[in-house]
Image (cartoon, rainbow over all chains, first blue to last red; front, side):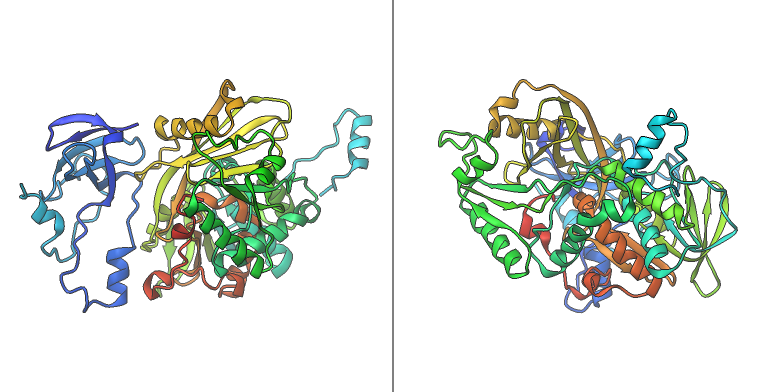
Length: 119
Length: 417
């Protein structure tokens, strides 16, 4: 079982309090009706599924209830860091092999971006 | 290849078992093959066998990072069934089940296929309606599946607790009598032996490090830990690592890899006649011929390649097992392990061409790939040989995530299957 640091509660809690929320930093297109099927597939279904460093969302569902992001190694399952929603994707390229590609997609106003400042 | 038979056993018994030959050869890789299959599990080895047997393509190599069947082929709970809801799923799993029925004879290798029945327990009104829908869909499609009352279920599995005061009361069950189990290692070994006999190279301890492509973008070979090997076609069937391999050719898949755990108990006398699954409380259990209870647990919620899993997942399953079968409460668990499953959003497999020429993929079998082994391998061989899917696998293509023609077994089963 993982021990997960919630950046809002500022403490490590057991995985039982959390729900995994899929990949982080995926921007929902702002013009959903206009995008092609390929673009929708890319946004909605296709994932890197990396062996190594992954950026993912967690929700502290049995705690503060808030979404946050974390960087974790998918081989050792060890967390590198967790950070509040809306904060930019940290540059961990020095710490881990450069398997991650830089985020090149056009970033719209994401749910995460607005939620980070919510009270 | 010397045929296995009762006479061979008798002959070897007479001379101290010194005449048994290696089941498959371990050749050095050639410079080039017609087909390279990445992944030496049941699906990959089976595809190589059917390529040789049915399509006459014998210049084939199966490349495996570790040892044969050391991935998910050797890490599952060996359940075989075909009682899925949608036509596309029924097509491929029933095709597979029919191949299971004659597999030992076909391979001249005892895969110990045992059609002992797979029972799925219903605990509430929703389960009952859902399972009866499956039963009707299956029977209309010509697949056996029947509905049992709680008493009929108990007659079939006497150790089942159907009392009204049970923690998880049982209001019926669906039973597929042709479902059952098989010996997972034997499936990999049997396919490897039969394929090797037909000239297929089985290359173990050889990790694929890259996929080399020609000027037109088509695949021309793979970089491995044993050097570069050329190939006219490359077919990837690497279960949890499909995303990793395909990313070497810049193909992105709709997969996430998560650990799925299983465990076995100490061996006991025969007590458990079939496979029992409870989707609602998440427990799968059967008894192996060696006498161990074989128990399947759930998946972890996060992406991982760790081949382990959280203790709370198996605790949850054992809680359910102990409630359903109170007599197992003091049974000791001997071993636990995890496998990495590649799951699609609709929990149905993907088998088809990729955007890269001469690169084929067989992935997304998720938590239910073992039962599909012969069928998947057979249809994958057809895909590799002909360049287009067999009609039984025509719905499993990668482009369904673009067109929206999903095969939503996830919603139909409401559980990892």
